[in-house]
Image (cartoon, rainbow, N blue to C red; front, side, top):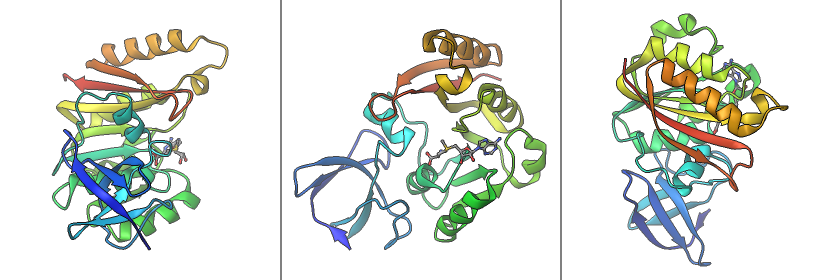
Length: 233
Ligand code: SAM
C-alpha cells in the first residue's frame, strides 16, 4: 500500500530526496529501484509517477549521517561500493537506489541466516551482489569484487578498523572514500569514547586515509559515530 505524500524534493545530494508526507512529517527517501517492494517495513510513496521509499535514519547509519550534517555524500550515481556487514540489506538497498543500474554494491555478510534475507532483497535489485563471506579474509572474495569507489564498513567488531584498512588495501581506489561506522563500546567498554575515536582515527591516517568528517550519530544511533575519510594510496 502506498502512503500519501504531499511533495518530494531532491536534496543537494544526488538521488537523495526529502518526502513531505500528508501528516506533516518530512523524511529522507530514495527512488525505489524495486518498484512495489519494501525491505524493512518502510513506507512507499508515489509522486509524479515515480515511486520512492522512506529512508529511516533510526535504521540506517548513512541516513543518520546525512541528517547529522554529512557535507558530501560519496555514494553517487554509477559508482561501485564494497559494503562490509550488509546484514539483511537495509542500508545496502538504499545505496542500490542511489547508485542506480550502472552502479554496483557488493554486499558482504558472514551470517548465513541473515544472508538468506539479503539474497531476497538482491533478487529484485540487479546492481546488488550478496556475498557470504567473512570480511576478515578479503582474499576469499577477491575474484568476486571489482575495485570500489566507496568502502562502507559496519561490522560492529572490536578490530573493525583493521579489517576496514585491510579491505581498502585490496579494493579501494586511489581517492576513494571510506565510510566507517564505529561503536566505541564494541571496541572497549572501559575506555572513554573520545579516546577510542582518537586511536581509530590515528590508525586510518597511518594507513593512508585523510579524515574529512567524524559524525556523532546521536540521537539516531546512540553510541555510534561515522568516519568519512579519503584514501590517498
Ligand atoms: N549495515 C547494516 C545496515 O545498516 O543495514 C547493519 C549491519 S549490523 C550493525 C552488523 C553486521 O555485520 C551483522 O549482520 C554481522 O553479522 C556482520 N558482521 C560482523 N562481523 C563480520 C565479518 N567479520 N564479516 C562479515 N560480516 C560481519
